[in-house]
Length: 390
Ligand SMILES: NC(=O)c1ccc[n+]([C@@H]2O[C@H](COP(=O)([O-])OP(=O)(O)OC[C@H]3O[C@@H](n4cnc5c(N)ncnc54)[C@H](O)[C@@H]3O)[C@@H](O)[C@H]2O)c1
Image 1 (cartoon, rainbow, N blue to C red):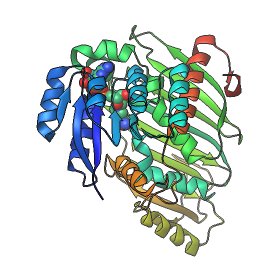
Image 2: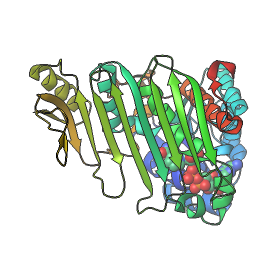
Image 3: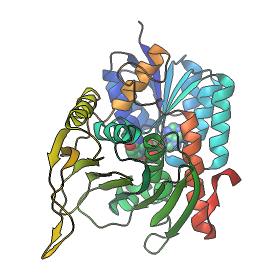
């Protein structure tokens, strides 16, 4: 099969990563790249033997592309996506968040539908082995009925103050932790708990430290299944790591603890304390199913004894768990690889991704934007926002 001809728009941190990954990939050839900073476009073009453009419209006029990657800053996704669709590009891989306004999201969604194009949103977390394992445990009912959870994804204060050099304040001011960070979280939740959908949001935010962007969004999401999840993202933390990411979910019969990158004094790891109804054989079968999905978790039968000093609460009963200790991030561009397979095979569940639900498209992008905008609206109004009212 001939290689897909790729163009990349926006050549900053993520756009450069996409360019070098797609340059190395056997299924793709990067033929053109574009950035409003022409020197950057020429430099990146030179690294991969592509043609560089200071204007992506010119790039789209000069090349018949099979795939366009859009990696411009958060509020600037709409124009290049619409231009690529108007130029007849059949496949688009767009960085998250899908959009930073509801109007942008609707425009792009409708244009993709009208053109019969395919648009993938790069919600990269979906392809990490421990997120695949999280979805599996929830979908298999190993926690019983999911009822409550929390997720926090925080950035070091250096992100909104330094990460993009002299462009940083403008960059962070055009975005927020709701767009930049919670877009990842709300997409993961929709994917883990599918087919449940968020129906209602209550959120707070504040600007005490960074006046040009909110310091934090802290929200409660209520799903139509009854599940409630607290999601929180701040970028005013003075901490050693760039990112901290922690999730935990409780069901009627079990609890999952996923310390993706927990920060000071914690060890990264993943533990599903699963239903006591499972036999040892069933536990091993789930372990093998997870291994087949790339998550090398240990099956554990043990007798925890919760104590604090002289206090003891229960303990001694045989408990079942699936466990992974360590970071377990996997290949950073794994989702892109699955999207390329999806294009080649003409399906949203290609070989190597089967059983993990459809890959994230404009449909997921639209829902992600709706939830993100509901979080912002709720924080601004101090009211609960129902998603069907948007
Ligand atoms: N998937 C992930 O895990 C992940 C992680 C970090 C960032 N992102 C997302 O990737 C996107 C890019 O982030 P980044 O950190 O690479 O930003 P960046 O500022 O480093 O890169 C953006 C680039 O786009 C260029 N640009 C701006 N307007 C343009 C235009 N009209 N035409 C062409 N180029 C233009 C800028 O000059 C810059 O080089 C953001 O939406 C961000 O949220 C995704």
